Length: 143
Image (tube, rainbow, N blue to C red):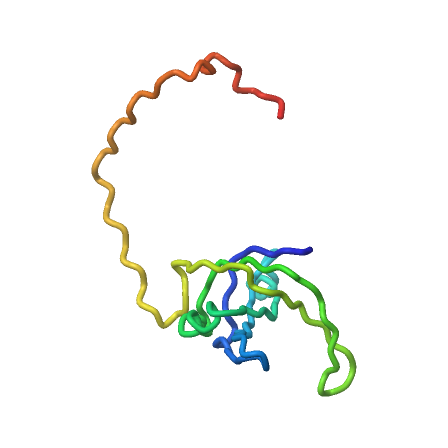
């Protein structure tokens, strides 16, 4: 089974609905950049249609907004074929959200994170570690 783990940006607000069985599901439009920058100075973008199931979909809906970034773990990654409105076939990348983590990044309208305090103080010296008996081994291990 294919998996994809990475930093994604939401392309639109999450759409939470319920299945006929009453299970909540959030539809997510995720984007990530890959590769080298092109002549326009931008990296290519890959879009993934993802679904988040269960109670997490309902509880996280308010945070899953356009422009916010999360670290997603996706599985059941596959390509689906569909009929375009203007005719012909289209393809889309589809996946299921296994896990997600909040990141420091986010939408542009959020307040910037405070700058870290200047590090003028000297760090304390680390405490000496007891010898493990392997201190005399060669550091150039061939594997």
